[in-house]
Picture 1 (cartoon, rainbow, N blue to C red):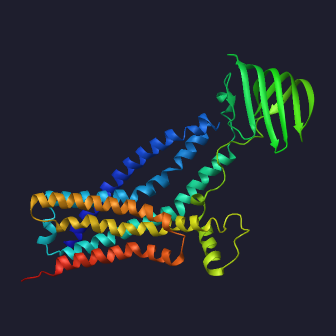
Picture 2 (picture 1 turned 30 degrees about the vertical axis):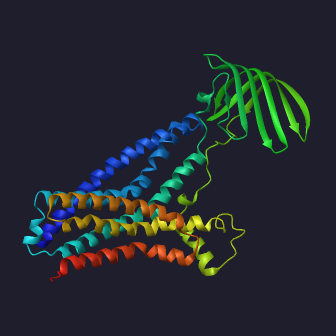
Picture 3 (picture 1 turned 180 degrees about the horizontal axis):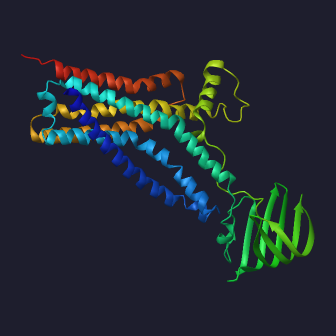
Length: 374
């Protein structure tokens, strides 16, 4: 009988969790997708790249919302059981409150494992794959971004200005400046031109113009009747370098091993160096350490079963618990920035969720096991 009661409670929490996660994840994803429109409108990427990049952000959004949605799910389910007196089924069947608390803690371990799997493997993999799409994609939306009397600089080291843009796609009075390196650049002017596509590559076909090459403060000019300027050789201005949050967890662990165990000189390591260690420590805590705050917020939500009998005090108690849970979630995010500064400090911060759990558990044990009489 006890197993059936606990199973029903678990299913209620699980159903609410997945429905809420789906709704919140989709809402956040839509908002982010709107912000990511710059990938097309300003950086020149195609719609396929845009949709793949935004789609691959879904695992990250879901992972970030797990702790909050789980807190809401447990809080809502227990509160619903309290309001409908379904919670009495537990006590009438001889289930002690401490057993109910233990069940909640055991259940929370499932969500901890789920979030660690997402943080440790799925999210970095999807984020890195999304970055690869940006890096390897062509700026095939560039022709649609060109407009008259406007400087176009969506690609690196190239600026284009069109005086007049006709409806048939022809350009008049074209100015282009290409920065080759620090001391070398190229200025191209042309009376007319048009963008053409040859074998999936875009070229700017220029007619009747002049190329001015500038090198070490010296210049020389070359006139032309017709030339094709290859636009595919330019890369987007979008950041395509892999970030720490997009890096495989095993690579980050290996970096920390070099720093703390092997004590290797990281000064000349391009990725794993003294300046990046702090960020790597923070990222690994976010992936592995932060999910353990799930234990804390589940215990806070479970405190509803200890609510006072007075209705006014009960409502105040529930509000206090909800605010406390939200505060712990926010605090867990802020604490991330404190990591990586000192090894002993990192150990202390890593133990915080477990200290919270022990304190709450002792409080529960005290409230459910002992009563003082004067």
